[in-house]
Image 1 (spheres, rainbow, N blue to C red):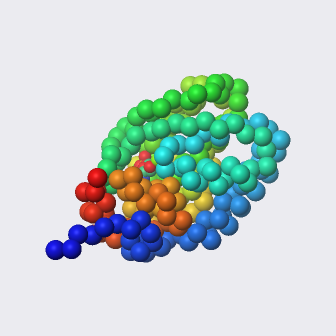
Image 2: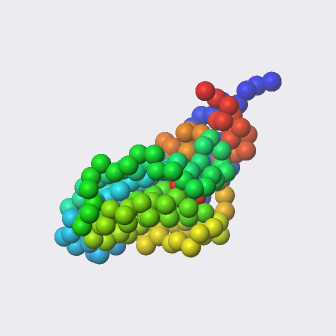
Image 3: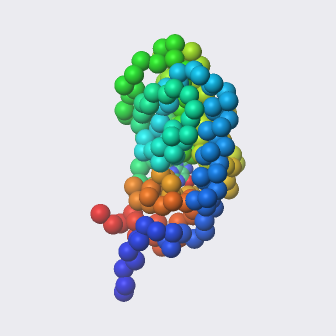
Length: 192
Ligand code: 5GP
Ligand code: MG
């Protein structure tokens, strides 16, 4: 039997949900909205590792206000597509955000538990303001009452990969966002 070897390119996708071009246009728009709101304020951008890394890198370079960058890691999923609750913050902030404007950047809002934990965690640091920006929002899947202040795209209830989003740490390098073929979900999970 031939073993499936994930190519990590778009051929492994069942369907492309958001193209590279749409992402790029929307990131530019979001940066424009954020720049209009923050004007010349000094903002600490808190990127949620590892999923928001690619989105943050693109967004950050288009922001027209002074920024600092910090990162948090919240572990909500292992190598599965099932949510574990509550998510744990396993990599705390490096900078002190007391009295600072904080903008949280995450890849995707699903049940909402991750963003809720992050918001609770950051509030304890007493920032001057706290806003959230997610690239993707699966609104139908929400389990807790939380919405992001800025959303790139609302998407259907499906497990997606690409543009920073992984399956078992694979596929973060895809330039677009899509649904992985079932066979590759299995292949990616078993490849070391
Ligand atoms: P929540 O806590 O809102 O259920 O889940 C948020 C986190 O779960 C995201 O930051 C992301 O890491 C992961 N996640 C949720 N949905 C997806 C998905 O469709 N694809 C991938 N790759 N990760 C997801
Ligand atoms: Mg994440």
